[in-house]
Length: 488
Image 1 (cartoon, rainbow, N blue to C red):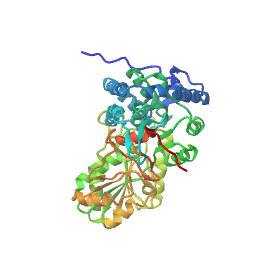
Image 2: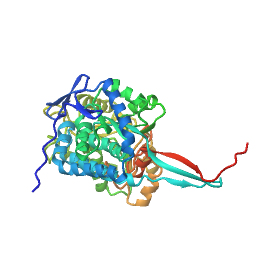
Image 3: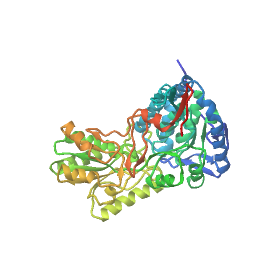
Image 4: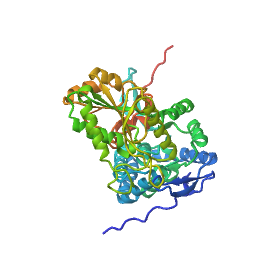
C-alpha cells in the first residue's frame, strides 16, 4: 500500500528566478476566511524580485522550447499524477485558504487535473503548415512557435484552476511563465502550483511566482517589455486597466459577468430550479460565470419562485470543511461589504427580499443565501454580484426575456431552459454572450472547454485548441530552392 506523500512546506518563501527564497517586500497575512486564523505570513516580492523573475524566465525559455515535445508533455502528465496523489492536501488548502466547500474544492481539483492532462497533449498538436506559393521553386513554411514569456495574473475565487488553465498550456507549448496570484490565495493560486511542478520535474527557472501588491508590482509586470502575453482573470475595471497599460502584447482577458438564466414558457420548472440554485449559490456565488439573474416567463414565474425559494431554504450554510455544507464564507470583509451594499440598495429601490439574513460564523463572513424579486434596474440585477444572491425577474414573453438577458454591458455566460432544445439553440444564438447553455448550467466544464466573453466580459478563449492559438505564434519561413530573377 502506497503511503501518502509528506505535505509540502516552505510557503513563506517564493519561487523566484530558479530558487525558493524570501521576498524582499513587506509581509502579507494569508487568512482562513472561515475561522479568521492567520495561516501564514508571507514576505512579498518587490520590484527587484519581479525584474529577476522576468530575466530568468527569458533566459530559460529558449532551451525549454527546444526540448522534445514528449519531454514537455511528460512534465505535464507528471503534474497531473502529483495532483492525484495529493488530492487531500490540495483540497484542504482550497478549503482553508479560499473558503471552498468540500464539493467546490473537489470540483476545482478535478478541473486542475484536467488542465494538466489536456496540456500534456498540446506539444504534439502544435503543428505548422505549408502554404502555396506562386513563385517557381519557392516553398513557404509556417512554423508554430512559443511566444516566449507569459504573464499570468489569476483570481482568488478558483485560484488553482484559473491559474493552471493558463500556466499548464503555456509551459507545455514551450513558454516560460511569471505567475502573480491573488493576494487572498497566494498558496492555492501560485505557491502550491510551483511545488507541484517542481515535483513533476519542471526546470525551476521556467516558473516564478510573485506574491506581491497589485498596484505596485502588478502594473510593472503588465508594462514590462519581456512578457509577450498577459493572461488575466478578474474584474472588468482591472482588465480595462491592463488593456490600457500592456502595450503591444497579446491579451487573454476573462473579466466580469452578469449571467442570465432564462426560463421560457415550456421549460421543466424543477429542472430549471435545480440549475438556478446551483448556478447562483455554488461556491457562495463567487464564480464569474455564475447565474446573476434568473429571468422567468410570466406564465411560470410564480410557480418557479415558490419552488426556487423552497430549494434555497434547504441549503446548509456553515463550516466549509463539513461535507454537508452547501455555502461557506465569502472570501473577505471587503467582499462581504460590497454584497450587502448591493442587497440594501436593491431593497431600497423596491426589490422584494424573499430570503436572506445577516452574516455570521467565527469570522463573521458567512452570509446566508439571498433571493430577491426585482426589475432589470435594481442593483443586484444590473450589477455583478459576486456572492450568494439571486435576483428573479419576470418576463412578459420570449422576446422580452431576450431583451432582459441582453440588457447588460457584460457578455460572459448565459443559460436558457425550454422543452424544445432547438428553440433553446435559436434563443441562445441571439444572446450576446461567449457561452450559452441550453437546459444546463455549467460553472466548470474542465480544461478542454473553450470559453470566453463578449462586450465588457473580455476577450480571449481558454482551453482545448484555443490554447494553441493563445500561447503560440506563427513564424513564416520561405525557402527559395532555385535561382530567382528579381525585376523592378
